[in-house]
Every structure is written in structure tokens, then in C-alpha cells.
Image (tube, rainbow, N blue to C red; front, top):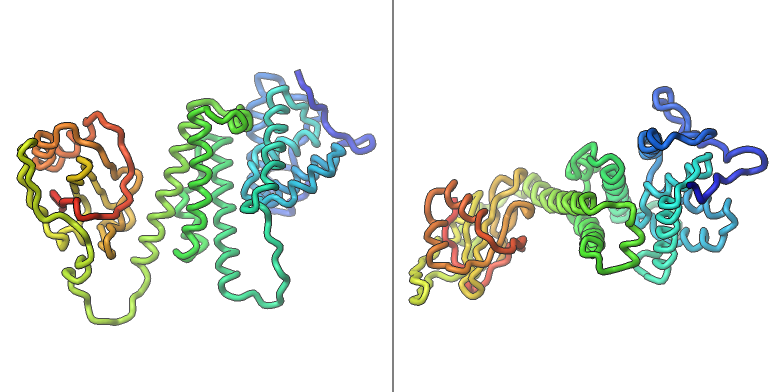
Length: 385
């Protein structure tokens, strides 16, 4: 079955790693495979091994271990290439798998192919400037911006650890928002982390569609249900990061200044005051935007595109905030947009009781999209509370 025998140095397997951590008393030493696990116990053995590496080592360590694996297999040129790729691009689980091969584990055909596909994918990234590590100048006293960026990189690494943990165990040990909150990341650094996760989201969406053969090969070890669950996890990470920005800004102690009237706050919000449509028998009057600021739920109708927006405040902000021409503080995971086929009838249903409106909207058979919060002169505020 196995196609990749373990790598030996002399007459012995590679020397065990020594984390120098008190937890080794409970977790034991680095996984070692002098005997191959039975097929029935293989999944359990690998899961325990992955958990051990995740507990003691970071994404940076995983990158180095994969490079060492290549060097010990006389693939020095590939190792040099991979050292120039940013650590965020490495899938930790496969790095641990390569390390386990050095510690005696014989890889199956499928595992060996998956690992080689990952090495090939990483090697191709060297031609993309955005993933090449930038050489940093050595300075004695880093400035505050560099310290903040370093903390953001640390948080990004922690989130990547959660992602690998989710792939390995099917669940994450903590919420993404707790990771960034623990490190007290400033809101200005969050968009850079969000951008990385959106690229990852796009990659897995392409994988889900099955149109890219290279990506499909690289992640061939994942099933369709796993890919679907991974996409949901990525959405939750992006949602938590956006919520963190709102929470952080809201919790920041403002300078003592004269309170700004709500009318002035919403003055720049573009919206449609009245709308009449004889064909669909609609005669609508917008709620004033002052009601929108501070509300926790809102229904907005885009008259030009016949799209109904349902906004729900996230659990951290608790209420909406109007800033310029945009609505902030809504939950991107549960807020939705749907196109109405019969707006005359459907808007009437939405204008009923709150629970009935939510249920009716949920049952509308239309493709759901995530709102971005921006308004325009065609959008009419139906209800907010």
C-alpha cells in the first residue's frame, strides 16, 4: 500500500523534536512509528499525532519542518523555493504528515500524492510576488506600527491554527473573535487579515465548483461535505473579524465632545422617500433614517432592482450605526438580500408581524446574497425596530 518509506539518517530515524514545554509530561514525546498502525487504528493514530504537533508548534515551524523533509529527501532546490514562500500559505496538517514520514510513518498512495500536490502548489507560488516573504531590515528599536503588524501576523497565525484544527478534528477549540480579542489587535490591521481569508474563501469556492484541476488535486483528500463545512467556517471567521472591528470601535473611549444629533449623523445617507408602482400596486413611504440609526433589525427595498434587504444587528454590536452612506453593525452571516418576483404581494407580507415577516422572507425561493450595507437613491426603508 505505502509508496513513501520513512526517511532514515544512518541507522536511525530522525531525532525527535523537543518542545521544552511542561505539557510534554501529559502529551508525551513526538509521535514515533517504529511499527505501522493497523488500518482500523490509523485514523486515530494520525489524529493524535496531528493534535500533538498543533499543540506545540506554529505555522512558521510547520513551514521549516516541510523544508527539512525535502532536504532529507535530497530535494534541496525545492526546499530553497519553499523557504521564500510566506508561512501563511502552508497547510500545517500536510507539513505534520511529512514530518511523521521522517519519524517512521509509511504514507499511503493517496497521502503521498496529496503531499506532492501540496509541494507542487507551494513551488508555483514563488512566481507570485504577493506570497513571497519580504526581507525585513534589522533595526534595534521597532516602531509602533511594526509592533502592531507583528501582533496582527501572530493573530493571523493563530487563526490559521484554528483552520487546520477544523480540518483535522472537524471543529475549532475557540471562536475566531476570541483570538483577535486576546491579542488586542487594532481595528486598522483587521482588513489585512480579512483580505487573506477572502482569498482562501475564493480558493475553496473554486474547489467546491470543481472547475480548477490543480486546486482539485491539491485538496483531493477533502470530501464535498468537508469542503462545504470549511466554507461555512471561513464565513464565520470573516464575520467575526468584521464584528470585532465594530466592537472595538464602539468600546473605544471617545473624546469628550458635544453630542452629535442623530439627524446630522444620517444626513449623508442616500435613500428614496416615496415610491409608487401602479403595475405592482405599490405605494410606499420610507421610514426616516433617524429610526435606522440605533435599530437592531431593518427591511430595506431596492426599487430599481426589486431586491429586499433584511438587516439584523450582530450579537456584539447589538444595534446599527449609520456612517456616511453606509449601515454598520449588521451580522453578515444572517443578514440577506433576495430578489422579489411579486413585490406587491411579498412586501405586504413583510409589513406584517415581526416573526411572520422573518418566516415569510426565509421561505422565499430566491438566491440569497450578503448585503454590503451601502445605500443609494433607489433604496426605501420599509421598517426598522
